[in-house]
Amino acid sequence: MANTKYTKCFCEENIWHLCQHADLVEFPKYVLFISNVIKQCPFWFQKTAPAQEFICWDYHVVLAVNMEGWQIFDLDTTLSFPIDLKEYISSTFKGKTGIHPGYLPNFKIIGAERYVREFYSYRKHMKDEVGKWLSPAPDWPLILGNKQLSIDGLFDFTGSSKQEIYSLSEMVEYLYEEA
Image (cartoon, rainbow, N blue to C red):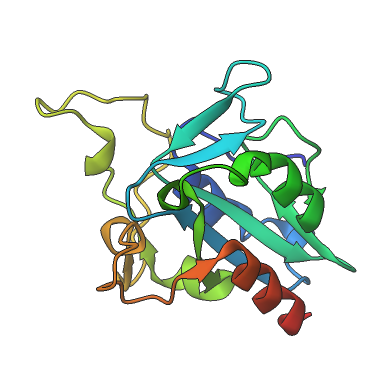
């Protein structure tokens, strides 16, 4: 997709920009914030993972767009872009069988319009204890929505989370009920 803003390791900001992409304006969209309580969720087919291996992300953010069927826009995948929701799930989370339940992905589902309006990023989670960047920061300014959706709050997958948490199957069911 042309003119898509991207900075490695800043998926939450990349998706914030993608939510507003001119080619996607007319379609229903949801931001999927993916993590789990232990903050180690295995993903296959990611650009930073070795071939045929998985990478454990502490969190990852993708966009689900209903374009005559749900498509996933994951700017870090090596799979098709976009990709059918069910194909994305079966490929990206292919190792879910046999994995300790604590590592299974959970999801927060946020309407794209709300995400654009309320998300803000301060990037402190991308700096080490002495303030050095863990990965180079984006060249765009900080996203300063109305401060209702912080990265800390979205990253909370415990029982105290302010957003509802869905299992993988519950997330799929939710999207298909919205179709």
